[in-house]
Amino acid sequence: MWRVLLLTGALLGCEGGEGETDAATTQDGSVDMASVCKPKFGRTFVFDKLEFLPKAEGFDLNNDGMVDNVFGDLGLTINDSFRSDIAQGRTLLLLDLQHGMGAPPFAPGMSFDSFLFAGLDADDPPDPSNNLGGSGRFLVPLGQFDVSCKPTSSITTTADGAQSLKLKAQRLLFTLISVGTLEFSDLVGELSFTSDHTRLDKGKLGGVMKA
Image (cartoon, rainbow, N blue to C red; front, side):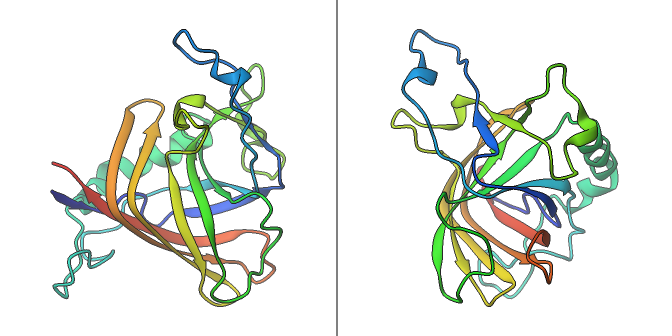
């Protein structure tokens, strides 16, 4: 097992209100999942920054008192590509808060699910200029849902004070459009809202990935 800092130092912003994210209407295979899978989306945020933190920063995933971040050096070569891919709409990562949660702030200790999706631009043709301004619309491919129409990327989320969230998942299946499905375990994370609670200001996620 490798202890790997996954989506570290992500700056989340540009909130979409409830229902602003749609399920894609096509899926490979003989079963028309779009006709039976009608997920409800909650308050959705799109990542406007994504980077690997340096090796000395991150989480202690095995409780030995030291940061576990074996991929930290990748930031020197990959972080610029992340910035370009987000700006051009080639990478669209979405964090969706459970439907029906309403708007933050949340009461301390309140627990609910959130979901991490790889999205597609709903504009036809794609228009990256509106992705990060709060008016973008996105598609979520049905391959990110299981046969019972539940997201495979469910994360237990707990309000830790009025402006911060703690994240945890024992197992997470996450799909990157250009790579495929990745499996992580022992996921941990923390996110913080801006003072007006309209944006997730900063955060980091870490977890364990099989070698």
